[in-house]
Length: 308
Ligand code: CP
Ligand code: NVA
Image (cartoon, rainbow, N blue to C red; front, side, top):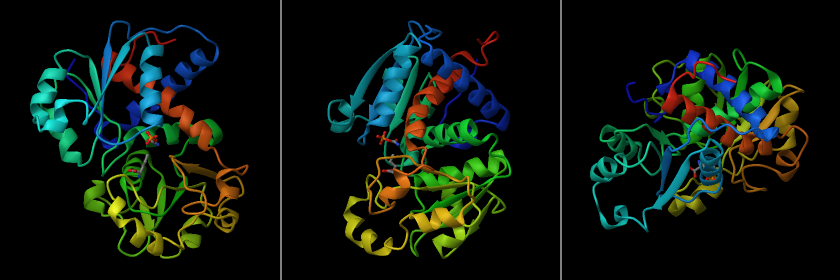
């Protein structure tokens, strides 16, 4: 089987996403009923974190153990990556010893260089440009609550960052629309987002207009990891991009609220929204694990022939 990497959302087809969402649901059901499922027995996942993490670390680690495999965790500081070993050499070595690698790093080109020299599938656990595992889980969560996302509207309020870019790729591939509202100077760059057409998104100056009639309202931190030096300037620029109950009120009455977390109540989202009845952020966080288990199963075993 040729190696399949998951470096950005567009690395899989719409059909493959249908498969993953079904498998995530089946795998979640097993987890909830304490049914053992060990298709990745004797397989090893290496995780490389060049940035901090709670959800990504726990969801991949717990998920791989639940699938019967084992996990090892590396960071820049405790590996030779922090002492300037080329990422290509690290990739050549690690990929001779493990079966799949998850990386959280800075520039997308870094994970692409790793993947080019890897003998095993490489998964993007967040880069400056993309966060595909998160959007995989987010769409799975939307489907669980509301059914297919095709034809729906997702309002993105805030930074034109890795999450926004990935939502655009997903909309382009799966046939929904993103309403984008970002402060001036923090817009999404279509070229960086890696989409050719502007048909699947609309840009709004006022976040209220972006939220109008949306099926899902979502946001993220004002300052992503790696951009901490801009924190004060961002606090000023983003002051009007706080998701509040007024924004949810103009969305559809059954609109959901999502946030990839970690969240800052009183900055990008009001407490009454994230802790309110339309918020599904805890399901969203849990679903990282179920969706990534389906992803690892698919990347390592393909479409398992008799899935149960
Ligand atoms: N949403 C997310 O990726 O969380 P962590 O940074 O905690 O992994
Ligand atoms: N955009 C955020 C997401 C954190 C999960 C960041 O990159 O820090």
